[in-house]
Length: 391
Ligand code: PLP
Image (tube, rainbow, N blue to C red; front, top):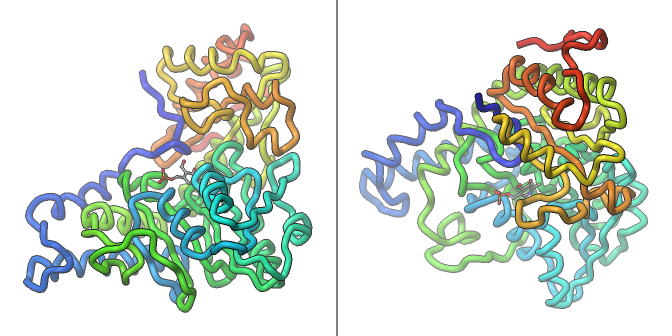
């Protein structure tokens, strides 16, 4: 048996995305910069993908710059805008794609302020306001956190940024295709996304930029992507990203409703059934398919729990490390939320997605108690019931 519950790390390719991509890996291999028919066909496919992405984010007033990852989109946003002497404000719980870029910008003379969230991972608009000044060029706060799943109040944060004359960027890599984001209504100036987090291929992302914003390119060359990102386009990948966006536009609300049911059943059973279990992140303002737990007194055993679950066929992540390279280190996200180093070292991230079934969650609930050192599987206990598990 194999149960994949690590959708926050990456998602499987939706078969409909693969089907849309295949022709561009086989017969329709033209270079979009060529003037002949094959080239024009590839260019037309990219144009369709651009529209599909814009439409998912209701971003008629934005342009799409396709990149090779969410990481590159974040780099382009920050390095493309922030100059020596500029002030940049970010949250302290951003992904390393933002935080490491901030360190690089500081080495080039930018000033960076990192805002702490509250204990649920929420960045309060008041805390952001206290960090901004009239010299702030850019504010960047992620739409959803990759460790604890907490969603940020984007419209309120963007409003604060604008009050100080700053632009507002959001890293929407975890949120894209999972929750509705309306770039115009939320007044977001720049938005980063990545295809592999919402059933598209790896190695393709995009930065959406409100038209009129002056951005310096990172990659110079043949002038592709409006001069903002040179290099022959990854046509099949871009087509896959477009198709993933089109599917999300029509399916994200039904996906989300089903996943919230499964997620809440998982959370209720774990919190009520495993003594000492606690939820990390906001109870309600969280990604539909995302749960992150600690087990009081057993934090040191989180990695053993993860490996035992792996042996039983469950793929989940440590919430403490954003990659296996940092295994065993306390999570800077949990530390910024106010947890001590012991608690910040031992958490489990369980993330669900489009292909997660009720039986997957039931099987995990059956296995988890024994693995974390409890004896009775949760589903065999009298309370709570499996109500809320839909399909
Ligand atoms: N930003 C967030 C919030 C992420 O979770 C990730 C990936 O985990 C990234 C950026 C990086 O995206 P990519 O893997 O496309 O480089």
